[in-house]
Image 1 (tube, rainbow, N blue to C red):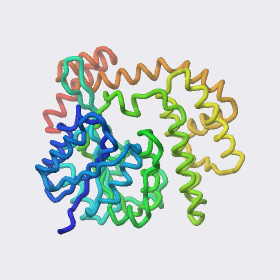
Image 2: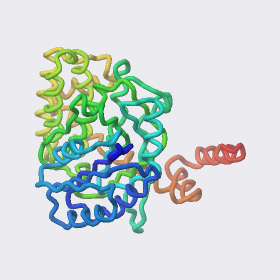
Image 3: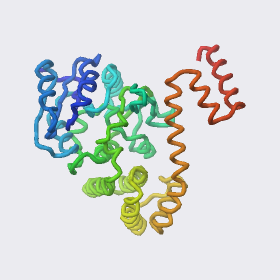
Length: 381
């Protein structure tokens, strides 16, 4: 048996409503030299039978059936089985473009990369039943795309969006450094630990400014749609701290970056929590922030000024911070709503996009925008 180019690891739990659509994109990859490792994590809804039927029809599929152990445990078992040159991750409620792994693999091989990642498309189902697709860049910095980068010399790369499933990871790189997912119960932010390890060890990475992976936003079982996982992110960073502490030769370098990553991901977690759970989360986070400050573990230069101010506000008086945070909630909600309306308008055509800009930007700015669009069109841009 020859080594496949790519092993796609798919942790699966009660995914029957989405599985056919997901598997269609995976099995129709233009890169045919793949293996698909489906780890059934104790599903109770007929998922196992569906996976076994797929495996019977396509010899590239391997099914591991096990008792429920959570997302991290399922991912670790899949990685252990993977024999491909590179590893990909697909979650069974998502969709992948059929050219995804061919293009990522070509880039990874050409540049001998530890990993390569790309932009992605969040999507949800609109009121008319049709899918609405957005476009998310993993970095706002154009200079980071299409070139080989080294996280060891550029800690700002830790700010690039972490979505692990947008990329490919060299299998021997992952296994050499014994990278693993946190085997905490359920499926809550275990992607953070794996992401952090990949950046800690990688020396050759690249980003592609194309979107291949479609990330579902309207699965109620997804962790991004659950407001009650109050300590999941903090617990994940306790596990990551154990990883940092277990490598004393790297601790001085990794620890300040760890605190930066913990900060912006805990702020994301806070944004998802219900109001009644925000105080208990912030109380614990405040204690941990103050401990880091007192221990001299932070590097102020890694933080943006507003981040540094927020970090210290939480450490000193989390209750005052929460009051101000809640006062700004309507403004954040409006920004999110506008972002989604813009995505829908772009998909709906020029007239819808014109109405969108007219509503939010007024007639003069909309007229300028429209004129620029006509000029660019005439120039072939």
